[in-house]
Image 1 (cartoon, rainbow, N blue to C red):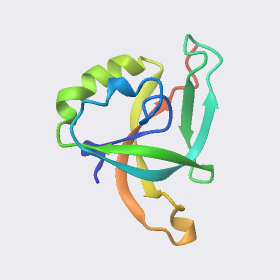
Image 2: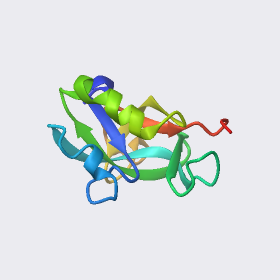
Image 3: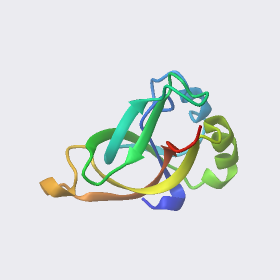
Length: 121
């Protein structure tokens, strides 16, 4: 799993969530994992009610569903547009679903994640 072929989802785009329709037709495989940081409900800037994420290596273990696909280049613009300018794709380390490196659980690989830009109004 590499940054350019994997996207980690922590919120409404995960399988079974309300906006999964945005990514459900992208071919690939889903992998469960954990990233480190903080998930919170956005209460400002037009994204009210949606989850936001900020990475922090000392933060909480955040469960993610990672879509690994060799066809991301055909779909990223559409997903970026759906996420909007309040979110930015950034690289993040994904750990096994049972832990996070510090617990002896191996790193699965690198993925992209939509980080909420908290300094935007």
